[in-house]
Image 1: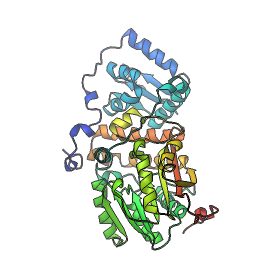
Image 2: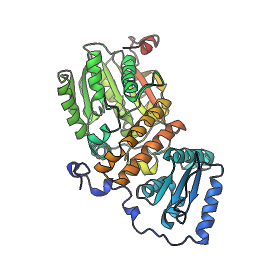
Image 3: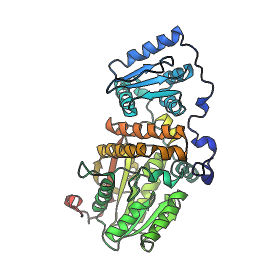
Image 4: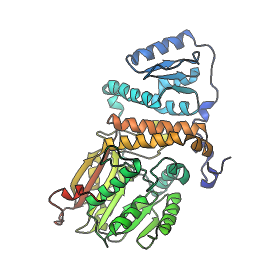
Amino acid sequence: MNRNRLEPLGVPHAEYDFGAAYARGAERSEPTVFDRWLLEQFRKRLAGSRVKALLWDEPDAKPAEGQAIVQFCDRGAFWQVLLNPALHFGDLYSAGRIEIGGDVLTVVDEAYRYLAKYEAQSRWLNKSRLTAPSVSESRRNIHHHYDIGNEFYRLWLDREALQYTCAYYAEPDMTIEQAQQAKMHHVCRKLRLAPGERVAEAGGGWGGFALFMAKNYGVKVRSFNISHEQIVYSREWAQRENLAHLVEFVEDDFRNLDGSYDAFVSIGMLEHVGAGNYEELGDLMRRVIGREGRGLVHSIGRDRPEPLNAWIAKRIFPGAYPPTLREMMDLFEHSRLSILDVENIRLHYAQTLHAWLDRYEQNVDAVRAMFDEAFVRAWRLYLAGSLMAFVHGKLQLFQVLFAPSAANNVPQTRAHVYTRVE
């Protein structure tokens, strides 16, 4: 087995063997009359779509210009997708029992158009759960996604700060590196960071933002993260940059954050906290920033409550939940925190994901060498699906700036946010 795959992480083989169970027992006998009738009904539902559905007896079909083909390679795959596409499509595609001809983005784009068309009929199914993962559950969920190898993420994230969160395209033709730098400046300006201040960070990723704040704004940062792989990387990076005296990377859960700080920041962590833990996090934020501090939470969200896609929740992001703005209010109302600014940068995330997907495909052979073809397909579908979720407004990206309710040192305009830092 390839050393980069699973062994150094101690992860059960099945956890990352995408679609293994789906690869067995494929029935490829001649399609029956009933199979063809079902396909015809399926095609009628897709009327006007750029995607054509085929059974397994047309292996040489090619998509027309601007179109795509979804081919079911056996009867079991076809029936499972008809019964529960949200759960089964990803594993069946990963296992090679569904083939896509043409651009996977076209397929996902049309899937979201289809969902929008029939959304009103299924709205009663979209019920969220008030999740409150424990510390041990949070560790397990973070380990599943983030501890699969730093080298994997280095293949397709920006090469300067390793930001696995939404970039900010202040200029539309920015590279992903430039846009991530712009995102970090954007957040720092919102927080009005000043030299010598202390900043608490919850969920620090590979440490790029903490180091950026210290290097560019002269602040001292204490960054909490429960991903061991990321903490090790962050500490080594701080040493290389001679910034270890300004940035402390703590391998611990955010719930154990203590001390007093001028600012609190969380970029891309709230999705993993669980709505049942929001009041606890809100109390923590209020406590650490005191009477005159400020904070910012940057999180994927939704316009209305919905559970995460079943396949992504099972294979990619267990325990994750993108909240609505109303649900996010549990962070602030209970803890006497005032919201100063809310910005939705949804389309910036779509552009970010496009850059990630392009770079992923450029390095797909390296990904295949680290893992296998099923992993390659699973992450291609995850990135493409996420991109289209932002394009179609199924996901949002909220930045919420806040301060204690009685803090009077808040700016009266937003001019400081748009003062460019060269």
